[in-house]
Amino acid sequence: MLLSRVADALYWISRYLERAEHTARLIDVRLDLGLDRRRGADEAWQFERLYAALRLVAPEGVGALGPATLVDALMFDASNRDSVLSCVTLARENARQVREEISSEMWEQINALFLRIKQAQRERTALARPHYLSRAVIEGVHLFQGVTDATMGHGEGWQFLQVGRYIERAGGTAALVDLHVKAGAAAGAGPVEWLGLLRSCAALEAYCRCYTADLRPRRIVEFLLLNVEFPRSVRFAAARVESALRTIARQIGRAAGGRPERLAGRLHASLDYGQVDEILDDPHAFLDGITRHASQVHAAIYQSYIMYPIESALPA
Image 1 (cartoon, rainbow, N blue to C red):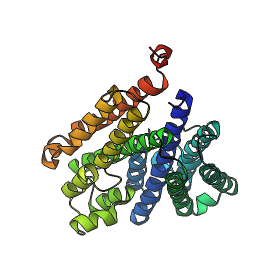
Image 2 (image 1 turned 90 degrees about the vertical axis):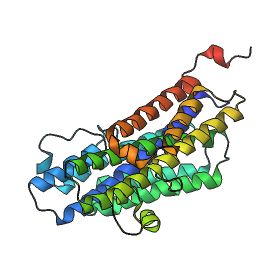
Image 3 (image 1 turned 135 degrees about the vertical axis):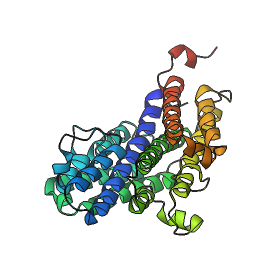
Image 4 (image 1 turned 180 degrees about the vertical axis):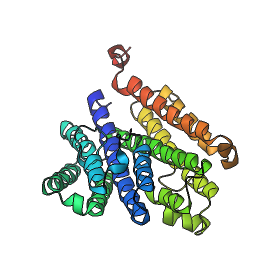
């Protein structure tokens, strides 16, 4: 069984990197969508939407911020624990603490990503070319995930990396869908915004292969929540979380059906048997339930594997 500090560090490496990639992608897409908007009210709306998508409180007067100020705040603000730089820095620090558990290639990749962002911060190149840095972050996280799968043994530590990645992904996708469904109900999300939602989840091409290029909100919601094959759907992420937790329990010799596995299984089942028509009857309640379920799984992981009482680890 891994030491609790090792399990904790591996879990958060994946969560922080997934969050950094998610933020970078949203910045990239939001700046693209803002190119053809008129300045003024529309600009305030688009920046507020970006903060809402990241589950952050927009600063007062966000409409007066230019894209450069926005990128600087969400990319480099060290006081914001969800900025790209903060997330990558925290992931790197966790990797440093468990250097003996990860491969040299993993350490080199996460260190290279950190140094690339720090260089962009010093040279201020991101303010002139924000898309370049956003895509560099996305690429860097993808490379780390690929290197991890190729060079790290797929044992208990690797499973904690999977749990962290997919529990973070499920929450991020659910929050994005919830935001767009609310805006759609208020007649605030047009076709371009639904297109932006698919791009924010790297789902445009996969959606078109499944449904063609007919962008219908109902189909988009169904695809991002319930598709069983797409890696960024909430259903896919929930299945991976449940599978990883069951594998961890089996690898350490715990009886099947512990609290983390039960909660993850309940989340997965709600999506396995969910119907889009039922979801759209009260989408906010359903999506809020997903977020709440993910928080419960997180708490159960901590209780079972990280903050557990010492007596439970001692032989009977």
